[in-house]
Image (tube, rainbow, N blue to C red; front, side):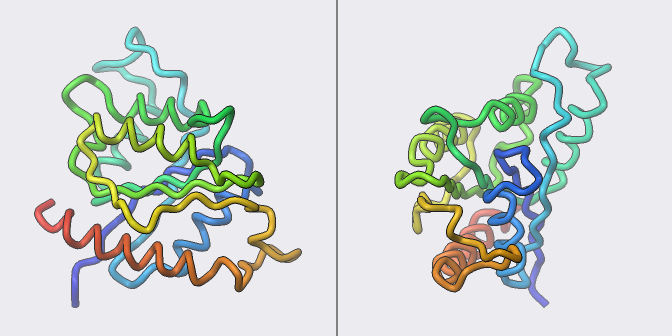
Length: 187
């Protein structure tokens, strides 16, 4: 049997019924057996503050970093707020990248999928996340790009994934599985 890679999934929206959380769960269902996707919750992280970090860091910081460190890869599924990264997700990136020199992101193969009700599909947030990850030494999958506009139409009344978006999500998660296998092999 081939290796199963654990993927830390960071969802940029805190709403329980967010389209992005639904997409993260759908990707988990569509993922090949080589990937185990685990949503790592970010809503309880205090705003990053170096004054409260260190040897006696808040328990949510410690939990979050442990979950990231245990993962082989990282996947971002996020909306866009004001053409950028939602504040809770940016905070999670800051917490996970600290203390300086001990980033829990470094070297983990990553991918970014952004979705919004608007036509641009979170283009700005997608690229801002990518900019952060380049600095944090995360090799990011380049293709297929995933800026999904019209996110409200992806799910039926009962929350089921629509057939219209399913083929793209399957293509995305299959490509990501290959990306993870190529880049996480030495982890």
